[in-house]
Image (cartoon, rainbow, N blue to C red; front, side):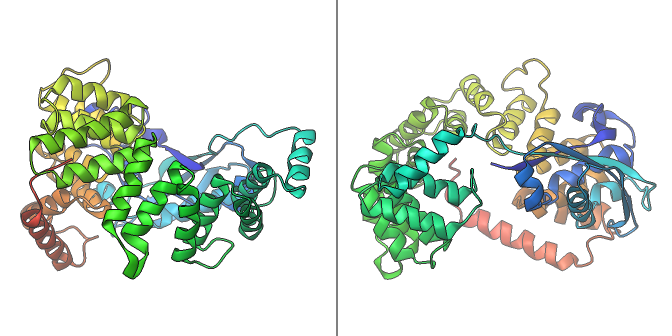
Length: 434
């Protein structure tokens, strides 16, 4: 997997709790909050193929509208395409937190994009590559499936979805379950072959009948979502259960979450939690987090804050900020002791850096409690943009009181309507689940 990691230079020495406690944080200190919510720059393909870490150091000036009015590279990554992508991403960002300090138009604010390619498997040596290709040409289904995966993902060869489909189909026709599932994925995505949900389901079923876990899980998804008039929840549940029984953690999480939502009594909730526990036993991050929620809320398990915190800690850094936010809330409420350098604000900031909407809302509450209403409002806005209904409602509540001059929000009724939609959704929801 490929990703970019952001490091904010001037804020690097300011921990979250210190930043909250400081009187009147500067625009440079709060710049990172806005960047947490921004869309990440896309890797230029040529740079990604190079697979080396690079750093683009840049400066921007923020105007009265809260948007970038000027930007420049101060230390190049050594690749103009990476530098240009970093600047383009910054120019597309709004900066309500910077605006909340009252310092806009600002001087130059400094930050970095660190471009870090995801880990890649060590490529096989030349003779091994040649042997696999020769095996594929000779009709070995396993070699054909492997060669297809190379073409699909651009490993050792130039990415070519059409070639991937050709090699997957050869292996699939020979009965290789992995290739059958992989070919189904290409039909589902329309990659290298026409997009065709029925062809996808056909190949998923071939793999599923051979006990392939992802084939079973994907077939379940097809019967639940993509087969039009042939959607069949009973068949979907059958195949999802087969995948979960076979040990696929993703299926166990999906089955447990679904069963928890549909549960009508404690016995059914316990059965749902048992599926989550099976995924957690495999160290699956979502299984750990959701089992933690089950334990924290006493849904299908005995309520136990200490056990919930332990499960959240095992999932830290692997759930897109959900575990950090949940653990921060337990610590903030005094329901579990902090360990080491943990504190709620620091955990919420880690959640924000993973772009988890609820983390912006929780951090905003801390700011509001400490009297920094303007910056709290900016965090609520950022959380609302990321999709937190709690943050939207808070922003709408504060706006007439303290945020009426917020220049980024030129359409207040839009926020009011979003707040109404969130309130209506909350009223219609079932009692809280996971």
